[in-house]
Amino acid sequence: MKIVRSDRLNINTNTAQSEALASTLELYRRYVRDLMVLINARWRVFQYHQGNEIIKSVEGLIHPTSKRPEIRHNYFHHRYYKFPSYLRRVAIMDATGQVRSFHTRFNEWLDSGMKGRPPKLTCATATYPSLYAGQCVKFSECGTQAEIKVFKSNDWVWMEFKLSGKERFSGKKMSPLLVRKNKKWSFSVPVKMDVALKKKNEFSGKVLSVDVGINTAATCSVVDKSGTVHGRYFINRSDKDREYRLMNRIRTKAKKQTRHGNKLPFSFCKNDHRRLRQLADNEAHQISRQIVNLARDNECDAVVVEDLKGWRPSAGKKRSNMKARFHRWFHRMLIDRVESKALELGIRLVSVYARGTSSNAYDGSGKVKRDKDNYALCRFESGKRYNADLNAAYNIAARGILKIFYPKVRENLWKSGKPNACPLTGNPFVLSSVWLLSQS
View 1 (cartoon, rainbow, N blue to C red):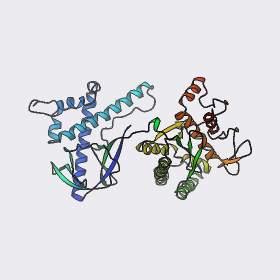
View 2: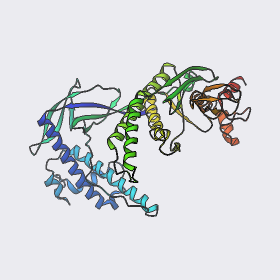
View 3: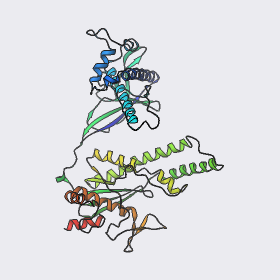
View 4: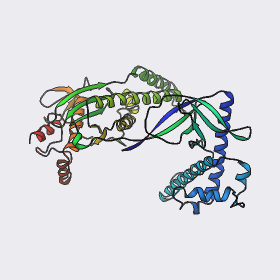
């Protein structure tokens, strides 16, 4: 499987170097802005161009050569004198992509009956240039220095910069993107990698299932294709105190703001909400790394998760603590991080149908009931008490095992119209169903 990952290399600059990079970025953005106006005006013709065909057509309008001394638009040649040819072609593709995106959204708005406000073409965008290696940027052999073609004193010159940062990925490096964030400059270097996924004859027969919860961030279990459980793991968020403190601060301020019937103003507690988003993003990275490391250490063939894409919880009563916690649930963010990291190691991510994984007992005894005093526990019909998230993790693993190791059985279940039923008993497919399949 071919995947693309990005390395970040920091560019260490002084005042003069930073000003040169800033002027280069500003001029590039103005060039893209003017190109967007031109391309949009001739979109009836340009919309049929495929790939790099647009470059030749646009250059024929704005760039004179010895064989083509007369051009239609002299503005670009005089306003952007000596603009690097490779950077010009990057700008043309950048402008074309933005114009194409606008017309796609505008046509969708027309097809939907013109509901809401129509999309607008914003020409002054915060885009960044991609630098062709050898033409716009030259890296040293040791990788600690780079020469960049910058716009300084109304001329294009080569300027040397020192680089810092560690390259995490190995593969074919592509043209880096010049990025500025928080007043710091860096290269975003895409790396194309060819990762070999395990073949079926190389499978170890084990999967790692993940149940993403509220009380426990992630409950994992390692199960093999015969239904034997090899490991159980509980992963909690390390920032619960900070998260609860920020949520209580927002809740307290909201009560004071609305006690006389007033509505919350726009961007209410925006800094606290930003901190909550940053905490969730960081925890998603940390927990996903732990999950993928568990799958690697246990030699699992796949990571099995619930397919909850697009699902939104009702989240309990208004102004309750559980409602706020559901609102901050980062299930989709965590699964995206797990998929990204697992693919780098050649481990598959398998999504399974979610309904019934938490409400059915893994031993096939029937429905379960959550404890009123402790919602993390549940009671089976046989009277057995068990961890509710761990029970769900077993059932998630069972459905993943059915999908990976018993494809013909699953195909027959889909044909019969009962894809999540045990083929032998007809009950919901749980871990005990894998025990029966392995013995039959």
